[in-house]
Amino acid sequence: MLAPILVRYDTGSGRWILAATVLGSAMAAIDATVVGIALPTIGRHFHAPLGTLQWVVTGYTLTLAALLLVAGSLGDERGRRRIFQIGVAWFTLASAGCALAPNAGVLIATRILQGVGAALLTPGSLAIIQASFTPDDRGRAIGAWSGLGGVATAAGPLLGGYLVAAASWRWIFLINLPIGAAVLAISARHVPESRDPDAPRRIDLGGAVLAVAFLATLTFGLIEAPAKGWTSPAVAGMLTASVIAGAAFLLLESRSRHAMLPLAIFRNRQFSATNTVTFVLYAALGGVLFLLPVELQIVDGYSPLESGMALLPLTAIMLLLSARSGRLAGRIGPRLQMTAGPVIVGAGLLLLTRTSTDSSYLTGVLPAVLVFGLGLACTVAPLTMTALGALPDHQAGLASAVNNDVARAGSLIAVAVLPALAGMKGSTYLHPSEFASGFKTAVLIAAAWSAASGGLAALGVRNPEAVAGPGAEAAAEAGAGAGVGEPAECFHCALDATPLNTRSRT
Image 1: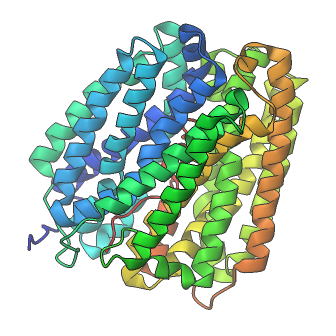
Image 2: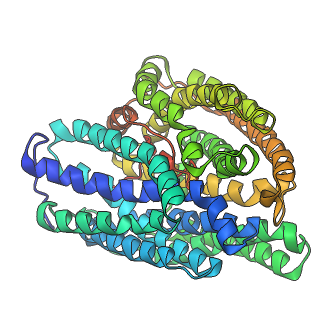
Image 3: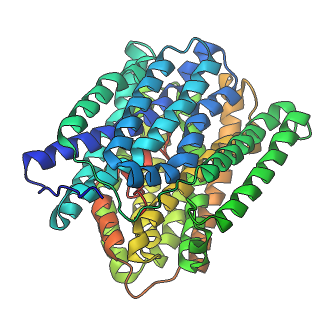
């Protein structure tokens, strides 16, 4: 067993640990955000169809979502600092590969590798804080980690828009090289190693492989179906393979003694209901915020920098109101906010339909962003607290990791399927009138999904007598710094800075 070295928040050691973990997680969050801003430029550079742009986003999210749980287990068993450093190095090298990509195929491949690195570093970031700080300072450290990460994420679109306009889209990846080098140097010198003595000695690699196979085949089928046809051998074969891989994953996880996803946790109605709400809501968010930067730049004539700035009020609202929303949910229970919040988000999405006819930011975009932000601030902290509080305290890390993974999976699938549902194909994004029509349809679909998630919360979520256990208290602290801008890919990645932070399994 490797005993952790506990430090105080107001010490030099504590500040160095915070710097390493904030920079590491912010590197992945910023990268996700700026890619969304750069998509139109990347598409024009490679003369790529819409499906290729979808793969630039989903390739990263696919490996990140599929490997997140097993990566957390690796950190617990092999050393959290070690796996965090491997993830940072991997992510940095993959970023260099993205910057040097000679064609769209290589860019997609290196984005997939980036997702592997992000999966390795993401759970370690918060787990290092949990293991390194004294119990009295842990909540403060988590709040600072989230707040600083939120600031970094908010700066991502501005930095990305500037780099795309002033230099090249390749610089949005090159910027990760000095950051990654700094994180590696700081963590090697100042971050203590820690492990979980109760972590299983065996890692569920079989489950990870099946999860990747399931998400990859499903994503391929959904993205390629509009161009190739749903009955084409390639699409039908991939969708069939996804069903087989998904069934095999569930069978393996139900029988494995070391499952990365213990299916028994879904017998808890509160946990299952909360994650169902998460999946549907984040599908709505991920799908729209994949398309929004393209809409603003191609249809409304925004520059990359202007489209990056469009969601800044959303970040400000989250920073101001998320913690208050979490405290309110702790007093009255989460059901009301989890019901009303997604409906308000849906109303904000409906307002986005006006962007195609009103290119003015003040009248065409800002009202939608404000309503959208209020709905998110109402929802995110209570949702996260409920997910953490639904399971026993010793499973708070697993609960958070699963909830984060569900959010990413929802966004991944929505980015793959929403353009097809809206009738978007091939070069649609290069023709403003065609894209505007498809975007309006996509927003209407996403608004319906968002409202439906509120209805699911009303039916399935209960108000427990005590929502906030230790895990939920940490989520409320993190809520103070909630920020947006990642999906990174548009938005779901930006939400790495919200309370939906991945913790390693405990």
